[in-house]
Length: 378
Image 1 (cartoon, rainbow, N blue to C red):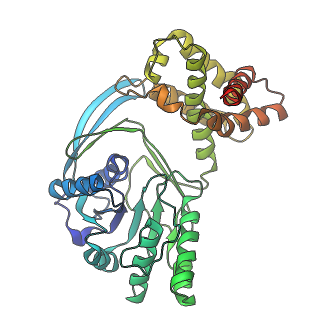
Image 2: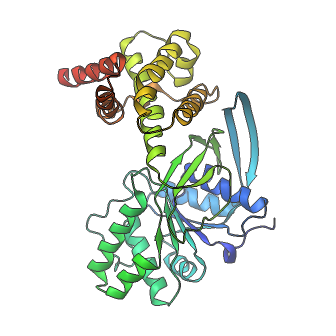
Image 3: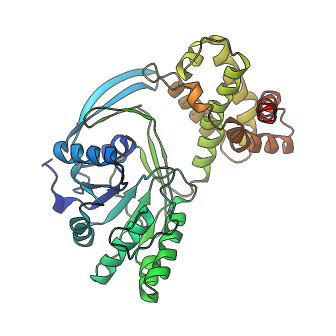
């Protein structure tokens, strides 16, 4: 495949995170290499942080970057490295708004974003500002420029870890559009000519490589909820167009995330334990057996009310294999942040559903009770 050019950069990616470098950009690279797509990526740095701007400058200077894939998949240890060549350029929104707007109007076909936990915060932003502060504000201003130029709509594929992320982003953009432009035709263009996809991403991109690059686990998923007229920016086995995201969200929250939170509970029960990382917990026979028992006896029988058992078992196996990744230092202390809140979101719904099915959940009950006791004693 020839080197990407900005004229080919039909994918405008908001965010320079290592996650996107190890996830979406890697999928686009593979799709280009296989001849499935010509689209390359223009990356946009959106925050005012100087460290982020320097990262953007480094990315624009190098464009090609290494992606190390390290971990286990299907019982095999994997430790490989490839060069990702799907990025055609990188612009800093605060400093290069005019070329960004010009490119967005002339070349964009897809928008991808991963703007962090505060990415959807709008506060008192306005799309009429020279450069809006928020990501939704920037997107609204760019979409209005495209609409005003008489261009076609495009497909928006947010990757933020927000349920129904496409719908939420569309609502924010519509609110800003009505606030700042008061143009019913623009509102109609946003809702009928642009596609706002709900997506779910699942991959651990554990480290950055300097000056540009990333380390990722072998497992990856980009699930995109289907809708009429939806086209995908690339073809890849880990990019899946699905009827509903609900099963994927449920599996991730109540198997992978629940398992992480349960390991924190186990770790807090043994404050003198030498175990610090998830992989160390999986290397300990007693810890690994207890986690497997929780999943098999309490979680999977409950989730089977909503999801097919073979799918649940396959995801359980993949989760345990990911947890055992010998290259990943995922600290239990980091996962323990907001532990009580995580128990309520990840464990409590399973317990409530289990009661309706008469499934006993003694270990999950104990984890929730312990988290509540710790919170009350603080």
